[in-house]
Length: 93
Image 1: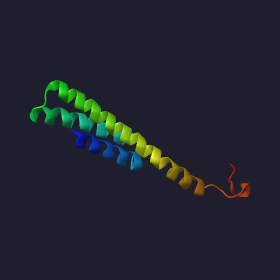
Image 2: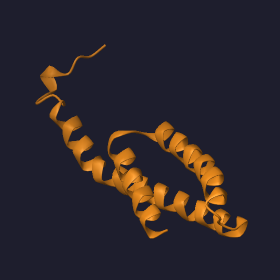
Image 3: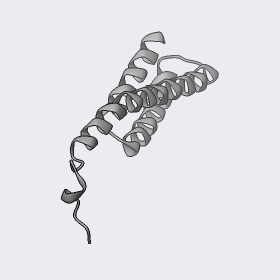
């Protein structure tokens, strides 16, 4: 089980670094569906399956928030590089 949490958190970080909100929604749905099918087939009890799904979702979403937090300074710096150097370069409507 701990390796599942590490994989979910790592996937969340990668999604947070490169993707945005729709990707985490799709990954969460896929995680729930896949876990709900595979875990009972592996012999997990229903209660353990439900608790594990919530733990995996939490790890995925925490990883996503970490990835977004890590990508914000890079995005902000990239956005600042495109700003005009002085007010004469600003195009006014």
